[in-house]
Length: 325
Ligand code: ADP
Ligand code: MG
Image (tube, rainbow, N blue to C red):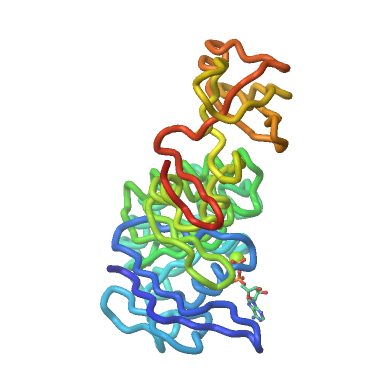
């Protein structure tokens, strides 16, 4: 384990920001701390970095008890949402900075800077000032700078949060590829479930100061531990008193196969999928998501009578209890 957080508590006045947090972050993986805003993700990351002190509990980094170590002794790299680069230094100088204050030999610094700028695809901008870069390029620079001193762990707090959707998505793919190349243990804070699902090996879901669940993206999506995780990681609809994923609702146009009867009230095509709203005879709207091919084969149309049932293997939540059908 690269980072071991044990029994960490943190309060601000009488507000409980973290409540008995226990998390183990494996070496070399990309782990996301995912949850709604105000849940305690940044507080936990800052405690790992040493920028904040826990009221109780311990933080062990690569086998060393770091609980009382200052940030500069923890060998962590940190990148925040807002550009953490030096505005008065060129791109190359920004990356070299940490190595220069460590008094590394000049040739070594030059080589390392070249290598890192290549890694983050900024080689041709090495002599530019940060103000001459786009937002996405500046965050890549911040990452290169954080990596320069070869941290044991890289801590990223919503590093792409201030960028527009398209650039975010590009940087997300880029971060994944970067991680596959350098394998530095990385903890990545995000409130965006799609971002967490796409980028990480493992996700720690944090809500109201507590860990709700830890697992791979698939595990969390397919077998959520509770209704909160289920709702936070993907879309949920309700069928006959149970909550389930809209693509786990089976739709049939034949009577006689059973299921909840209803009528299609809306069909919406979004890319390759079709989102069907069904008004159940007993009341209540159910959302069903299926592929275009499937919708076409069923000849679905507004007004059509249909019968709905949970698909085999669907995860459902009834009265707060998660089960598989
Ligand atoms: P997240 O990163 O998940 O959005 P934070 O860790 O930043 O959440 O904050 C968790 C909670 O702790 C929030 O309600 C926030 O207002 C509170 N909090 C964080 N830092 C402080 C502080 N220095 N003083 C008082 N409250 C704080
Ligand atoms: Mg935060």
